[in-house]
Picture 1 (cartoon, helix red, strand yellow):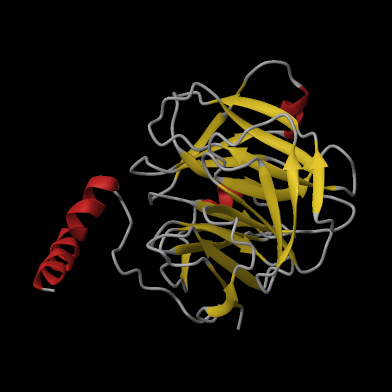
Picture 2 (tube, helix red, strand yellow):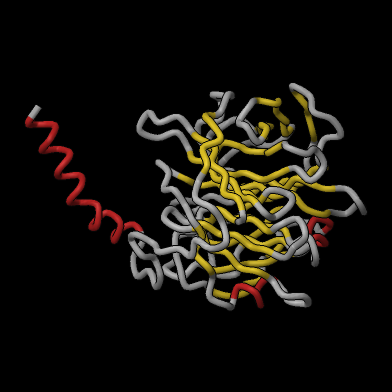
Length: 302
């Protein structure tokens, strides 16, 4: 018994060192973030996920076509599947992506695409823990017309390269107003925002991302833009950052302001966040870690 207590003590006292080594030179990353709790409530436990196949959830987004439906996926090495669940955590099926593999899927988004009045799902093959892959990919396909137990699609594939070399990223967002596609890096001391356009899908070969700006925090693992384009969420392992976007502003313009820090219940390995389509609620979801089953949390605007 004393051995296990001593081991637990060693892990506890080592945490500051481990964090400092994992996220060096962070400009803004309080160990216990203070948040402004006047906007959203604290977490409400929706429940554990019914589909036990979702054990390394690394992305989450709400459907814009099917009310009450969320899309999620596992990260590196998982099947090339997008899972459907409802806002109570119940299993609603899966989408199989034909002709692609899950090297390291890290985020998912829903937004506009080439066909007017059609919402598309974007899956980000953007993970690269060791910054060794010369290219990344985004898979795009229309939201399914119905909710089926199994649905198969052949996605469009966009191959991208960074202008400043390979890097890890876990945040993918699509702007519903400009239709631009954004990727936010993870491991830089100040995370870097990159952009590409919808027209990139029609180009042959690899497309170079545009480097847009740096943000004053690190270890970003997920993000989302509300369906009306007026609100932005980005999270790391310890905090949720929130911006409201003024009329006529671009996403980078809005991100230049200091964010509001929203309520967040730390999760075993929380790498997924999504707005409800009404923009008045957000959800978070963790990977399964330390034998703790993933729990879907929701936060409602007051």
